[in-house]
Length: 312
Image 1 (cartoon, rainbow, N blue to C red):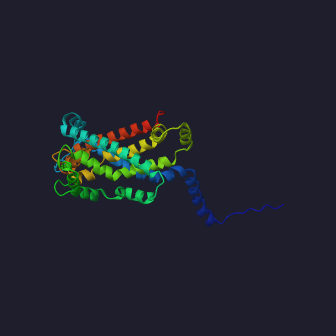
Image 2 (cartoon, rainbow, N blue to C red; image 1 turned 120 degrees about the vertical axis):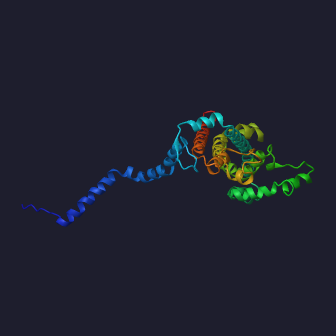
Image 3 (tube, rainbow, N blue to C red; image 1 turned 120 degrees about the horizontal axis):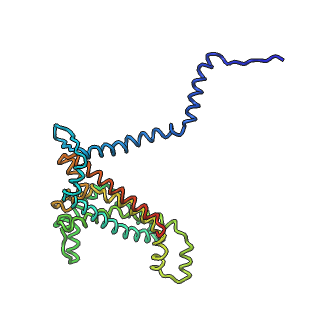
């Protein structure tokens, strides 16, 4: 019996053999190779700015100075936390704005979701009109509300006079500027709370409501004992999203008040803008960014933990 030996052409072997080795390598290391572009993008877009901001926050860097950054360690943080009363005031105003906005928006948003969850004529049209403020640009909204809140020419004070109520200075008075800004923010972002809650209502089981109806529970008891406990995880998610956004609110405050009157509406974002782009204290402003980032991260982790608790 004659054995036949089959050999590939020499040129073909020399070209296919390296290619096969490449294919084997790619197949063996497919997971890290496919993850590498996303990892590189994350490092460039996220990790590098964070590390660079941390490094700048340890420097004494006046942008207009010819000397450049000078390493001073944690001195910026010490000044910020213990000596800078303006930062402390901005922190208080930021939390005041955030808490007031979240409470008002959650109450109105959940109430609107309960209304739009019912069947009635024109519900689709009204729901579409209700979410329009959310898709408008904050600057355009701010300019419209500036005209509406004008002490002498605004429509708000005109309506108050028609109702025989005292006029308000709103954004032009120190004691009313934060509530006035909260009203503008609420008008824009209540639809987001409503949409999130409406999605949660659509997923609720029907069995508890049928049992409550058999037991003779009224509408308030059904809402308080069934709907609200089942909706709490959804509401916490809505609070988480809006808390992060409210803490970072800058556009409507800057357009409407620029932190005024005086410094009555100077939140952390306005203070950060002034320190970095008007006073050019880049190192000090970077330390504000780091502390503000830590605050937002801490609040987010706290709300996530609250959402996962068994009693919720």
